[in-house]
Image 1: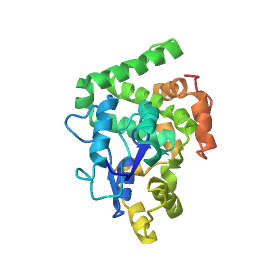
Image 2: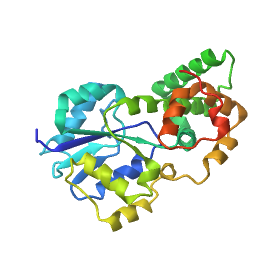
Image 3: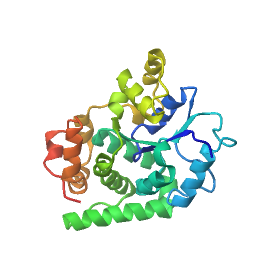
Image 4: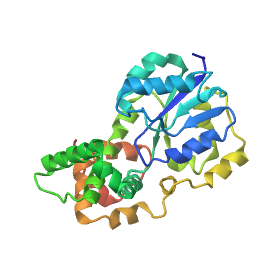
Length: 267
């Protein structure tokens, strides 16, 4: 095993990780996988995740020519302590966040796009069922349980990961800053490479103008997105998105519509 630098980006979906992986890969010394893509990989098994990380770190294997290697997505937050213990000081971690309302909408859109696969996947079925059961316990009422609504509820629940991300000792970067502020991109690149990598400002600017998927940009304002949700979606948002989570987003500088701040259950 080499002593190359390993970085891991912790976040849930629709934060702009596909775009960020392409940005990081634009540096000649960085090899970044958006997510571990191997047939035997099981996202929910720590041992298999470590096997894939070791393959990427191996000088004679995948990504062997690069001094800085890592992932921007697909590593479970529950494994953080075990990964820190195994890889020690060589491990550079960070979080990536995005305004919760456009992020929920993007996650909903992504779920709808992959409806056939996710309705037949036991893991997604279980995740949707668990979130719906939580919503019923919090509200003491029944909500619509069509696929689109279940996907929306699940997206709302994932927003609460901001609490875990803010409590860790790694830096948290806002997507909105990365796609608009060149110095913030340089800060992230310096962090993941332990100060060894920077990009030419012109290259950063070109990458900031490249939209890989719609999750990296938002076409509508936050207020417009919130207003476009069905009434039962907005109600579910208030039950499932914890008040402390909304407070954390506000502390990060995100502005939320007044109506979005009137609820917020303690999940």
